[in-house]
Amino acid sequence: MNKLILKIVAISLTVMALLTSCSNEESLQQFYVDSAEKDGFITTSIPKSILGVDASKFSPESREAYESIEKVNLIALPAKDDNKDLYLTESAKLDKIFQNEKYELLMSHSSDGVKMKMMFDGSQDAIDEIIVYGRSDDMGLGVARILGDDMNVSEIMSMIQEVEIKDINIPGLKSIIGELGMPVKEMKMETE
Image (cartoon, rainbow, N blue to C red):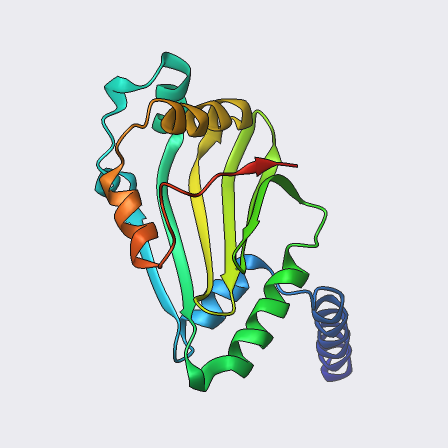
């Protein structure tokens, strides 16, 4: 009986070792969890209500896209003279995470040393997560996870264009972007 228990324990430990070695790629969720514990990182969760959007100014399609968004989880590592090595290490980790085929690129932006990407995870008609990743040697790095329920790529893209074209005031978003040191009005996204 004892030999049987020892064999089961040995087999279980072997299977667990195999499973953990196969899944040694870090996920975005694991990056968030690990980074929240590190000095220098800022983490927050922002409900969409804090953005101060007047959804009545949107078209019905854009209003539906806005309503599908629930919250934004943000993690940032501001650039400082004493954390250059940490910045390089963490941005390399994020670059590797976003090379995963499950992330589809929606937009990218690059100017004045600022690089940004907007990606999504899921199918185009039922997205549960949109990721905005930005970094700059001067400002640091940040990842925003826009979480929702069955978000639609074309509706989200239409909403973004509508915000730009109609110049819809989003005081909370502009404040958050401004505090990160990014020019709000001058930012133009280019689709790839």
